[in-house]
Image (cartoon, rainbow, N blue to C red; front, side, top):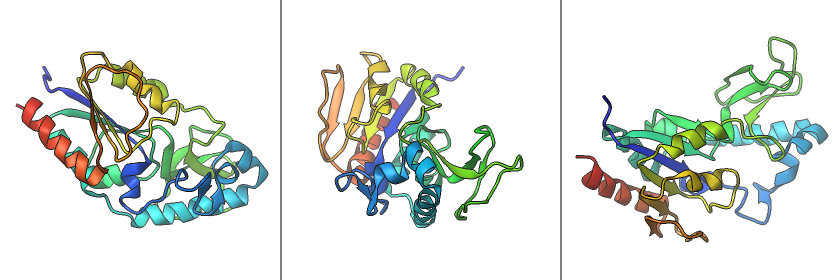
Length: 234
């Protein structure tokens, strides 16, 4: 019988920003000087797929070079003591690079592509660019394996199920303003300790057993991880 406690960690753009990856919330709806809705929405894809592909080709190449920081590495270390699931809003693979093994990518994955017409056709693409005319084996255009604005979040139910079973819940680098992911904390049992690590204290509704750590992830996460290991890792 596995008696190890279950930890669920919700991560957002803040933890990736410390590895040099900018976020679309940095500057008034612009992301690397692109209008977010032009490049990160299903309407934008229909309007100008070439622009969307160019944008994500740039993001893919950038993410391929990025390296995990001390926050990512500390979360990976939790697996030595606990059953850990990372639920991330990030589309990079920095958690994987750091050594975490159980990750739910709510918003998709930059290093994967899928068929525009057959969404179950998904495969790894590494850092290669996607071009108009690149097609899946069934003849449909390839697109980034990303959940855009205007699309459903298919892994949300899985994330809710995992979160509802958490013995410890952590939130790192997210404002808790992006739904549906921000609503995950509502599925955590009242008696479960909840750690929110972010330099900008997010506006939180009343939650029991809630602990704020107003630090960036590279500082706050290793500290909280050590505290959790000492307290619950026995």
